Length: 312
Image (cartoon, rainbow, N blue to C red):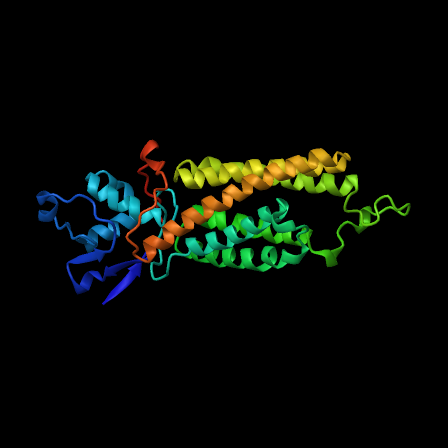
C-alpha cells in the first residue's frame, strides 16, 4: 500500500520501515546505509519518519548531510517553491499541478508573442481571444486551486496572477465588447475609439502596473531558481515595453509604437521558451525520464530561515 506525495511513490509508515522515492540518486556512503538510507541506480530510499520531516521541516533536514539536502532540492524542484516552512499538514494525495499551470501560461504567451511579431502574416488578437479567456486561465486556475490545497504558497500566487492577467487581457481584445466605443469621435477621426489617445493611454497604464506587479514577483523568484527568475524578469520588461508602445500610439507615434511592440513581443517569445523548458523539465521528472534539466538553484545563496510556523 502506498500513496503519492509530490509525484513520488511513498510507502505508508505503518506498512513498512522505509519509503521509496524514485529520484536521481545522490551519493550514499556506508554511514548513510547504517542510518537507513540506501540507493540503487533509479531509486533512493529513506525511513518514512524522515521523509515526513523533509516535507514539514525541510531546513532541519538540510542541516543533516549533503546527500539528504540533494534529495530535498529535487523534491522542491518539481514545484518551483521557495524552501520555507508553513503551517498545518499538506494534503499530499494529489498530482503535481505546477506543469499544468505552466502549459496554460506558455500556450498563451507563445501565441500572443508570435501574433505581435507578425509570424506568418498574423495580425490582430481577436481570432485567438479564446486562448486568453479559456485555455490559459482555466489551466492556470485549476493549478492555482491545487497549489493552494497542497500548501504551495508561491506557485499558488504565480498561477493566480497569470490567471487574472490573461482573463483581463482577453476581455480587452474581445471585439463584441466594443471597449473603445466611449472614445469614438463623431468627426470620424477615431471611428472605433481604439486608436484614440484616451483609450491607449489607459491600456498603457494597465500594462505599466502589471509590469510592476510582475517585477515584484521577480524579486521573490530570486529565492527559487534561475529559470524562474529569468522568466519573471523578462516578462516584466516585456510588459513595460508594450506599455510604452501603447503610450506612443496615444501620442500618434506609430513607428515608435511598432518598435516597442516588436521588442516587447520578442522578449515574450523568449519567455515562452523558458516556460516550455521549465515545464518539460518538471514533466520529465514526473514521468521518470532519464533526463534532468538544470534550473539553476538559487536557494543555496540565501541564509537558512529555520522558523517553524505554528498552526492554530
